[in-house]
Amino acid sequence: MYMEKLDSLLRDLRELENLHADRQADQLDYFILWLHQIKTPISAISLLNQSSASKEVKQIAQELLRLEDYTHMALNYVKLEESGAEMDLEEVDMDEIIKKAVKKYSILFIYKGIKLDYRTVGMQVLSDGQWLQNLLEQILSNSLKYTPSSGTIYIYKDTNNEQTLVIEDNGIGIRPEDLPKIFNKGYSGLNGRLHEKSTGLGLFLSKKICQRLGHQLDIQSEQGTGTRVLIDMSRKELEVFD
Image (tube, rainbow, N blue to C red; front, side, top):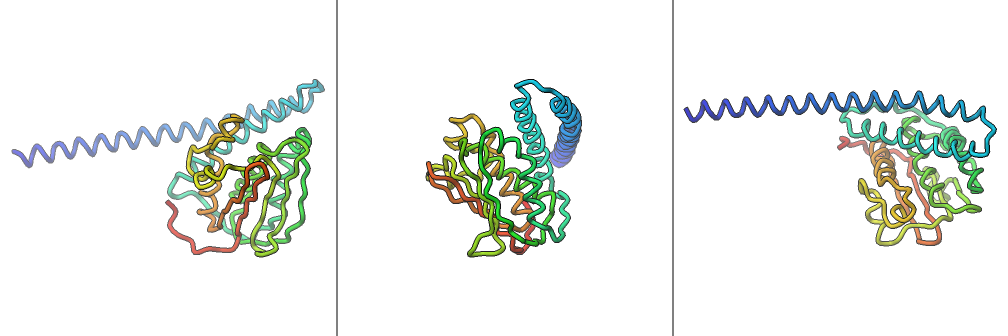
């Protein structure tokens, strides 16, 4: 009787686990569907905004860009958490990827009066072009958030390693005590809390993307001076992604 009761409890437990997994899958499917659907009204508002001549146009365009960024961030988070996320490795022209990312944020460069010092890198790397663009957009978005007006963002190839891309700014920088935790999920640091601009997911996702692509991500920063982001594009031994 004891073994029969134990078997019955184990069957009930498996049924509950399966039911929970099905519910989670349904919620995830709906969330992904919603994220894709929300892109349509964002695009429509963007088109309407372009035809307007009001003085608020630039501000609306900035908020639309932020909304689009948060939507893409949520999609990337879901994709990276899936065990079998797609990855299409091919030879990628880094200058093309950089130009696309810069073009996306051109309105923020102009509106905030931030200068861009971009030196052609001439790098061909084995990577996934779309994920690599997502990575650069996230890093560039961070630099724009924390670089003041009249500041400068530099994009260039590291002279010590021809396979390393550097994105550097002369923004507010990161406190030494925050640096060891910047890649933790949900950690925004003092700057993110003070400026209310951080979700605590951007650098976490950037690290995940680099792990998936086999690249190395390093951040050097000094508070009040600026931040340097170094992406080593050389191929690393691919491991099972967690």
